[in-house]
Length: 621
Image (cartoon, rainbow, N blue to C red; front, side, top):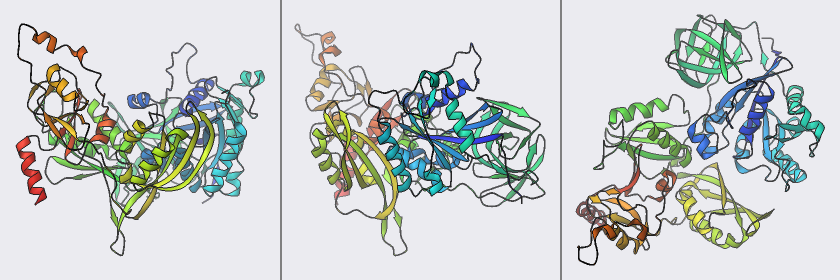
């Protein structure tokens, strides 16, 4: 088989840490590639098309687009920067031949950069280093480039990979230069220097044009008229509209099929063509049963490509039908059948997720790469109209050949002001964290020098850690984690939440008088006028142990006080606003989170006080 390089195509991925300007740079490349009309109104971060991506400021789903520069088509894939979405990253690297590694001109390479870059280097991809935000007053390009080179060597880059070119950019202005100082001449050229470097340094796809068609499916889309859309890279040959093909599953089984249409990507649009050729990133329709990781091949030579390998999940949660007294009030879909359909449908596109049936027909075990991976799924389902309940995240243990129990460990990178260093070291020691490195980063924060620490810590030690760390450092801590691997169980007990919950005594409507009594015992999560039910968690107690409080109780009317005064919400201090992430971190093993399109509530698994007392008594023996 004679492979030749296609000179008219470049397939590249842009990888970076969260908030280093990756999606903004893609915006600039699209504008300079004249993807948009002159008078077209273009939203910022156009590639972050998902509402959750815009709200959280991160890329969750890998998406691809293309620009044409000097008659060369550049397919660009925007990749997630968080390790919890590693399934997306691993799929992307199968589609591209090179990467742009984007680093901040102040921060340099960050922990999440390590994860994605390691995947690219392992697959032999060459990289161009793009130092972004070079216009910042505190930019330190020499430090950043040296630190990036050290990272390449640490991750095992080959000599060829370590000889990377460096381009300096200001993504917001859409300017690039080979020097760390941007000039007026650079501003006139825009991002031409970056495009020229991509074309000259990164290779085109190696293809065999005479071979039979072969395509690896890496992403799935959906269209109301065309149905399921399979997206991936053509590795050999060509496919035509209405062509007979063979779908090869990840287990090697073969199924006859027929393509309905074939597309390539031009800008942000899919353009239908008579045929598509090897080397390009394409889309095909007409295969309603296709899944990610499968191969589409020519019937004359049905050979499957290596399936996409995805690391195993490390955290799992129980999803179940909502069993609270408010079930069915706020959601469109609330039955076990609908919940089951939705969770198993997610497996079609979310390759790093696992779903299993639970101990009952209305319970499902959902496993993912981390808390954020599962929280994004929960929030997505909530916005689609589903109501359900989820339990506390728990780690997934493995057993080795000798019968020893292994647990997942994470590499934790912490940046914290020197003032809070002692508190962080103590907290991490209580969670079985092992310090690997500690140094001053050279950066200055509002509270003094910033200290960077590297810990190896069991995943169970990180569950519920983020909220406690933010509280202890007054919101100044920056944390990043990377999956390290499975190791023997960490010794010692890992500290958990040391405060109990405030629990509603009965069903009804919370009033100011009852809430004031609760406020004296801890921090409230709800306001006056909130409808509650027995067993619902309405706050955090200031001491260990749970406490039931009648927050629906009103003060008896008299000539001095009236009910109107009792309902005056201004007489209560501000409540603690609990996001979905906060709720997931807060709950204990005997608590759950009730998720509906309109509200997120905390509750006990056993709602009635008497039943909880009986269960506790039985548990103690």
